[in-house]
Image (cartoon, rainbow, N blue to C red; front, side):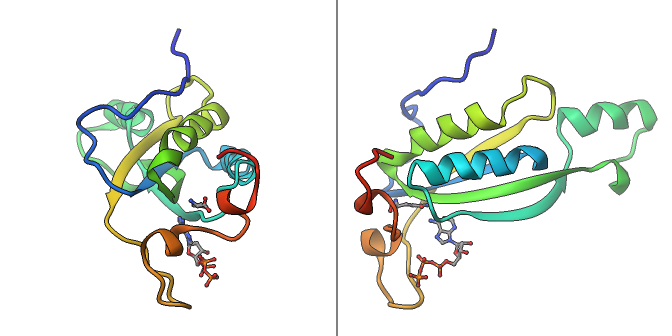
Length: 143
Ligand code: ATP
Ligand code: GLN
């Protein structure tokens, strides 16, 4: 049985103050994921409609023929969430808990170190730019 559980970042993850958690998920699970993130004080999220193939799209395709054809791509949502280092594992854990069905096609999460954050409105950089109103600094709820 595969269980979703919080882990610490493995040693091969480059050290950074900020990371982008990039999750490719089933579209119908995204509202559940985003409201859970909001509840833990994660307010900055970007989503895009994407299409892709993994084990889910690929298995259908292999039965059909040798070439990938575009109509075999499966609709997914990409969520991109930039957070500070100490929030990464909690965010990953939350996404898994809310997005997982256990069936092929649940998606994948990529963790990307982010060098800097710049808020366009103010020109702030780093921690000040990454911090969100209503986020961790404004609530007593641990992120
Ligand atoms: P401001 O206070 O100037 O509004 P802000 O930090 O609230 O700054 P916005 O300008 O509201 O940022 O953000 C614009 C868009 O940037 C958001 O709609 C969202 O798509 C994206 N975004 C902002 N912060 C993050 C983040 N931490 N992770 C992922 N996407 C983000
Ligand atoms: N780290 C930010 C905060 O605690 C939240 C980041 C985000 O919402 N993506 O305010």
